[in-house]
Amino acid sequence: MSTSGKNHTVTMTDNASGKSAEFPVMHGSAGVPVVDIRSFNKEFGLFTYDPGYTATGSCQSKITFIDGDKGILLYRGYPIEQLSEHSDYMESCYLLLYGELPTAEEKAKFSYDISHHTMVHDQITNFFRGFRRDAHPMAVMCGVVGALSAFYHDSLDIEDPWHRKVASYRLIAKMPTIAAWAYKYTIGQPFVYPRNDMGYAENFLHMCFSTPAEEYKVDPVVAKTLDLIFTLHADHEQNASASTVRLAGSTGANPYACIAAGIAALWGPSHGGANEQVLNMLEEIGTVDKVPAMVARAKDPNDSFRLFGFGHRVYKNFDPRATVIGKAAHEVLDILGVHDPLLEVAVELERIALEDEYFIQRRLYPNVDFYSGFILKAMGFPVSMFTALFAIGRTVGWIAQWNELIEDPEQKINRPRQLYIGEPSRDYVPVDKR
Ligand code: ACO
Image (cartoon, rainbow, N blue to C red; front, top):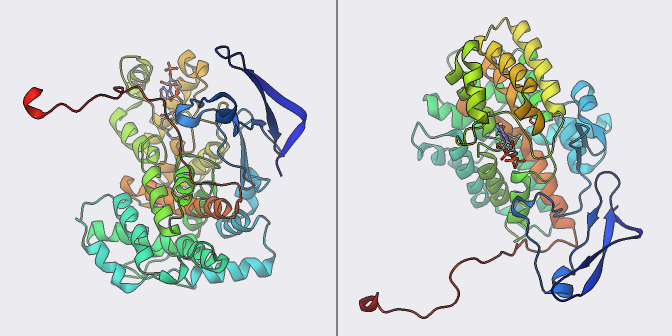
């Protein structure tokens, strides 16, 4: 629970008017305290300016905590390293949604409920057929997830906790079906229906890779690793897509529309789209000897190119998810007997970048996206599916953030202000006088 620190205030003075005002400092249970500037405009008649929200806290949250300097990521207080080793995605979903780890009985019930919501209304298949075969899976997901609100009218009342719960379960459960079908559609194969007797990741692999013509046996190592990838991506506090979901949610929009907005925000190459771009970039580099030239490009102030998979707004030391996934990538590729020459390029790129003054000074380290693509590629996913897989894992985080927003009495419609630098008021000029 956030509290105002005892007598901890920040005093600000407007040099123009000479007016001073005191603002309370709020202390959370961990992390950097925040200054409560809600009365700032009333006190000074000014707004604050913070493009990219680099210094702005937009909400109080109990879900996920990140310490970017120490490389700490906690879901409801539990370190990501411990969850990666001992937990699984279904348990992490329950934890993120409900705040506590489930008992064995609660976990079994939750997994059962999720697996029994994986089917989508059959008419939704028509939506897929309306897309071009070469549509990007994220484009399909934005459209189909947004369209769910047209099919599930019984879970649109955001004030009703039961409606919210049903919508939350539906979204977590149906996202793999939608992503798998987006993939099947692009390769011209029939849609494969979900199986209730399979685990979450296992079922997704089954829907992606089985065909009616041939039995497909899901490799348990692959299913376990995919489950780990989903767990690592499950939430990341107020990142761009979660903030988008919250912003859309603040207007009272229905959950399916809000999650579709989150998918759209995730797609960008600065965010979830980076995992796709990492592999494209490594393919462009091709061989280890070409790495220095790419690093030089990334450092060139006259070139807007950036090394995909490097840098993070919050992590300025290391990304703990990257540590877990980097280790898993090497292990899984070994177990699967996959030799990917691009992995050597990645290792060399990481080595050179980590020793380079440019990257050290700016505290740019590999992020979670740097290695995840290797695993997904080894599993047989095309590069265009990488961000869709991220979206599956992140759906629970978006939903947990959205539910928290709806239940937060302090939340209002999100509506930033601006510094207007356009033309001042002027009179309309008739067309013959221009
Ligand atoms: N390669 C080269 N230079 C970089 C990179 C990079 N990947 N990232 C940042 N920089 C440089 C910037 O050019 C800037 O340099 P300057 O001070 O000389 O102008 C400096 O580092 C700071 O960069 P900002 O853009 O201010 O940092 P910000 O915190 O806003 O950006 C971001 C974070 C968007 C992740 C950025 O590092 C980036 O674009 N990385 C590549 C894309 C990527 O991997 N995104 C995935 C993020 S993780 C995720 O969403 C799951």
